[in-house]
Length: 111
Image (cartoon, rainbow, N blue to C red; front, side, top):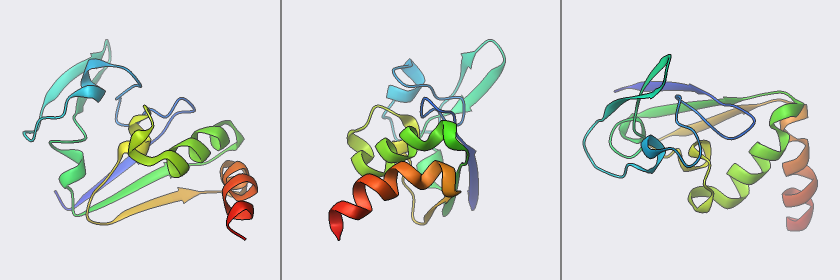
């Protein structure tokens, strides 16, 4: 796949992959399409989404501030699927509200 655009939730879910769901834990290298809820179909990160040439993660709004902090500071060690997004080229779209906690905690620590 050339491009994947992922929306996120305040709990760190993306692509209908929710923290601690069986689909989020799947680590196989093959694409897996499974029913993650009554109304959504998804693919795994490891076998499908993370193999895209470019991944764009959208996370805006104050309700996502703690998620952005956790996802960007903990990376793959976080249980949030959004934090486990990899790929050849990953871009996070954030706004002032969703980036505020990260800027306050992580960037100030680096300076």
